[in-house]
Length: 329
Ligand code: NAD
Ligand code: LMR
Image (cartoon, rainbow, N blue to C red; front, side, top):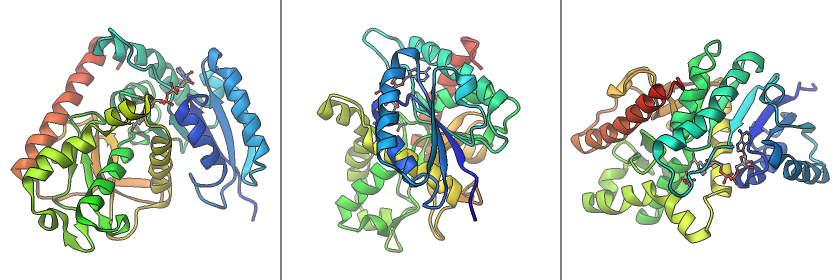
């Protein structure tokens, strides 16, 4: 049976993450090896020429699943009929910029994009925001799209999730594939909380296997939370291939489901679970099935975790209040 192509829109398509992402989408890693895709590359005018170059390279790969590429600087065109939108393009923080300036600059991007999604995307649109500050940018876009169910707007904490699994595997000598049920809570920022208290390593409780609260507090958590900054320091540019890989993982898991006995981490609009104020976009443990996700309920949150979840959630509520003040939500 010939399947209808899925329309995938990527913003910031000419950037570093875009370059690492587009080829994997076109080769079937985002949605599956039997799902054809149409790509829409949305850029600002200065990025259009480079996006055209990337499109030429995509053509040169002769990907069997790639049915079409459209390049535009108009969000109304870029999101027309979109089934999946990866919002990667964002305004980076530059020297002398305060957090409020950064939020305002990104509001100028994510508010019109949210509106264009509201007005032109397909009914089943799924949105992943990668561009930082990802959680609050997702909130801005979601608020500008009142006709789209709020839960379709998500923010990426899968890179943090993958980083935490890798660090835990290195510490314990376990295989990455033996680690399950890890959780990132809160914001994609240095306040995020990677939680191993419910995680399992080959079926055993991870915190008990590690049995080292000093390592947890002083090494593991800061290493994961500050990994983005460490990559920038080492590479002279922010993470790109690993970020693109995490975006692929996020959408693939959302569409195709979590494995039995495991869960993942996604930044999603809170329904009030675990004392996280309703509406803010915060990372939770989720299972996914048939294209929908559910927060894993009933986890016992110890004092160590509670304090760290609360700190990250506090930062998110402050970001929400700041964008509210700016009239962005
Ligand atoms: P980059 O600067 O290489 O590329 C960004 C691209 O976005 C540029 O080509 C730019 O022209 C484009 N752009 C800017 N405004 C746009 C708009 N309004 N519409 C469409 N395109 C627009 O940056 P990058 O390295 O690809 O990173 C992109 C974003 O992802 C940054 O905000 C970065 O901080 C963030 N990031 C997030 C995570 C995460 O885990 N959530 C990880 C890594 C990077
Ligand atoms: C990352 O986690 O690698 C990025 O969010 C870092 C950044 O500031 O772009």
